[in-house]
Structure formats: structure tokens, C-alpha cells
Length: 312
Length: 308
Image 1 (cartoon, rainbow over the protein chains, first blue to last red):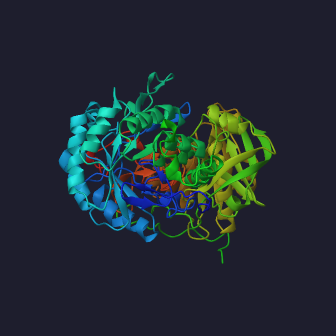
Image 2: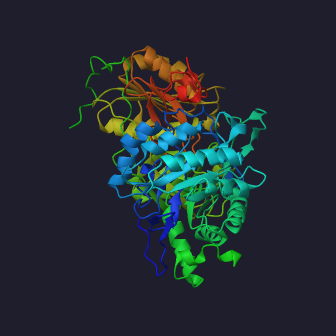
Image 3: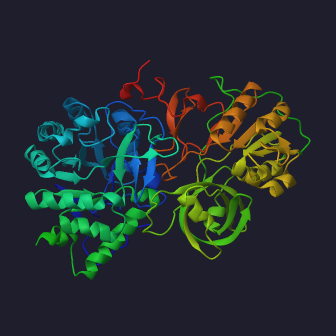
């Protein structure tokens, strides 16, 4: 499947990095992109946002790792992944060989880990930029998510921006599980973030009424899917209103072109499609096409003209 | 090209350098496709519903052991995860599956009628590896898992194998595909826990009498049964391949929810995806006793804080 050409100019950018489509995968929802190849033209989408990578390979948590919830799901994967060595040796060359752009999601438990990962990604072919996952709820210290504290978030983002390739934009991925997301967003922008990714999952819980115990092996998990979309949209709205000059990669329950349009109108200059891929592996191509048609119907010649339109 | 049915079994079973009787199942040759297809037929079978789909692109690619993943409802459905079901058979551009209605999603699938449309992705997963032509085989099915063995039994027969089948379930209404398997198997043994059909007892009771006379064992069914059959085969020195049934959110390898601890070709245990690295695993490579736990020898456990 290829992305259909339309009259609307769908090109946009992540910071200084131009991309041909505003529709990207979402971290943790498309692995490293390979599995989507039968369904999506990976070079035509905005970028493959990788599953978060850490310094060392990680097994992830024991099963059960997921529970379906109304219009969504709870997951507790625990950042299973090959580590930075595996990413550099196997996954990034595979994507680069196909002309796909990678927005590499990085995660760690200490500021130095993030900085080292950013250093390792300098100048790597096919790496469009870095998404700093400071908001995964499935970490060992669930109460100590960097993105829940403006100071901790600032320290990580600053270290990554300083260590990263200047040509690679750095996006900070924020958590909705805070009283006020704007100060965290402002802190990340002050620390040099080229953009903000919103939102990560919300921490949730499901109990099996038969066993009368939590369903997930990790007890709690991250809630995603259309159920979280209004929360995500609210976060994008609030941050764009407060920081109109900071680019936003919007995500959270996007399933259709009209869902994506809402994020664009709220202030996102690009969107990630996550859980919807589980339901529809060709969702990225479909959503690009639907968004282009929706913009055309509303008289927009360029996607960028619609960014933040709802605030005007 | 195939050996005759009377060809004797391989004189000895090859073992891998690390002492395993099996090698990891190779990936399928054809990539999956996604199609909106029409339900061509629906037939209640005991506690289950057999659906036949007009899906030529999937039917022509499918190999026994693979599965399909259904979307439940339309693009506004509140059930956002796919339902993965083993392919029971393919013929004339059609794909047959046996649905066991238990939750809301499978109940919706079981309620589909001829003429209805459904979004399906497939064929997915790694097929059952074929043995040397003519190798006698034992196939063991639990409940609706027996359906997934029909295509394999036919393929083995075509390759010159003698095929013994044991099909078991809790009760007669939870058996399936008996008609198709009867035509392919010799012997075809049925067991039920309550004795309502065939022999009273478990599939392993019947399999114990047959495993010594075969060169390979295949199984599909619930996890406890797969474990018992795999252990039985391994104890007898016979390679076994099991198709697992783990809950999957996507079926295509991106969600990472369906993992099991499985020993790879290098002898190291990883959390392996049941969808893309399975559903067919070497029976002696699945660490059944460790499912649902994280042991220190799983690759990457140290980064989770789990150390020996």
C-alpha cells in the first residue's frame, strides 16, 4: 500500500527535520517497524518511532502483559528490547536500507543513561531524531517517572540535547499523569527540547473478577487507545496554548483521519498512531489518506495551515 | 517425490548440538495480507462455530500451523484488539476457522452470518515444520485445537506419513473436526474427561500408547495439554512441535504481549512472541514451568533487576 497523493501539502517537520507525512508510528506500538512492512510503505509515513531502547537488552515483564478495556487496552510490557547495540546492529540499518526515517525512543533510569544513548545515536544513518521517553509508567519505580517532575524532566532533556547530534531534533515524551502538564512542558522546552510528544499512557488497573486478583503480571499498566483520546487532546491543547512556538507530536487514541485532525487543530504539527495499529495494521496509510481528505474538504491547502487552528 | 506410506521411520532422531530434539520452526515463506472478506458459511459444531471465509489471498498463502487475526466489529468498535484463531483448513479460495465463543469478541465472531464482512489479517505465524518424507507422526489436539491439525494431517499424508491422531476434550460437545480427522488418521482416538465420547481420560493416556511408534509429535490445544504432550514426547526421545494459544493484541508481532520463555537455537532463553516466533515452537524449547514468571537466565532479565 502506498500513501495516496492529494492536493493538500501534507509535508511537515519534527523540529528542523522535514517529513513527507504528519503520520508516524507510536513508540511501543510498532516494534521497530519491520512487522508493518506487508501493510504500510514505511518510507512514505512520517517516521517509524521505535520501541524505547535502553543501554542493555531487556526481557520485559512476565505475562500476562495486557488486558482489553473499553475502547482501549492496558499494557505492562516493561520495555522489552534489544538494547542500543541490537538497535544499531540490526534494526536501524534495516530501516535505513528501506528509506524509512527513525525517531528513536530512548529510555533509562538515570540521566547519564539517556545522555549515553543520545551519544551512541549521533550521525547514525536513518535516524531522524530522538524521542526521550521520560514518562513510561512501566518502569521499576513507578512513582518516580521523570516526566512527573519539572526539574527531573529538565535534567534529562538538557543532558540529551547536549549529547545528541545537533542535526537530530529531540522530543520529550510527556505523561498525562500530572496535576498540570504545562510546567513540565515548559521545563522541557527551556532545557532545549525541539518538540514535545504527548501523551504517554495513563496508569491503570484491571482486576479479574474470577481470580479476584489484578490481571496484569505487573499489577498496574499503561492505558491506551481511543479511551484516552480526550485526555491527550486536552494536554495538546493546554500546552499549545501556553507554548505556541513549541512543536508538538500528538498521540493518544488516534484511530481515524478525523481523530488526527482534532490533534492538528489543537496544535500538533504531526501525530503518532499507536494502539490503532493493533486493530488495523494498515492504519497509518489509511489515516494519512483520511486526514488529507479531511483537510481538503475544509479548504486547507497545507497541513501546516491547520496546526493550532482551533485556538484562533 | 514423496516416499510411500510403508517407508520405515528414520533410524535415529537427529539432535541439535545443544541436546534439543527440535530446531526452531522456520518463518513462513509468504508475508501476511489484510483483507475485508465475506463469510461464506457458518456451521455450529457442538460448543463451537465453524466459519468459512471467502479469502483467496489468505487461502493460497496459508500453511498448516498458521493462524488469522480478526478485527471485532467495525472501525468504531470498543473492542480494539484482534482475535487470533488457528486456520483449520483451506480449500477453493476459502479459509475455515473454528470459533470458541467465550468472551465478547469471540461471541461476536461466532455470531457472524453468511454474507457478513469481517476484517482479517493472515496467514500469520510460523507453520509446523515438516519431517522427512514418510516419517510416522502423532497429532494431539485439545478441544477446538484439533481443528488446527486437519490441514497438517492432510499435508503429512500427502508426504507419505502415517498419521495417528488423538483428539480430546472435557466433554463430547467440545470435540471438533472428528469427521475430517477420521478420514485422515490411523488410528483416530477420541478421549473425553467425562467419558461422554470415546475413551474416558486425557489425551496423554492415549498418546502414551502411540508415541513410541512415531518419529514426530504435533500438538495444538490448551497450555497444560501442550506441556504434558511435549514432556511425553521428549521423554520418549521424539521431537515435538506445539502450537500455543497465547492471548495476542495484534497477531503481527508489534505489541509484545504474547511472549513465552522459549529456548532459542543458541540455547539461550528469550521472551519470544507467540505470533511471529510461534505459534509453533519446539515442544522441548518452551519452558512451560516458567510461563508467567521472569527467571534470571532469560536474556535481559538482569536489566529488569532479576539476577541469579
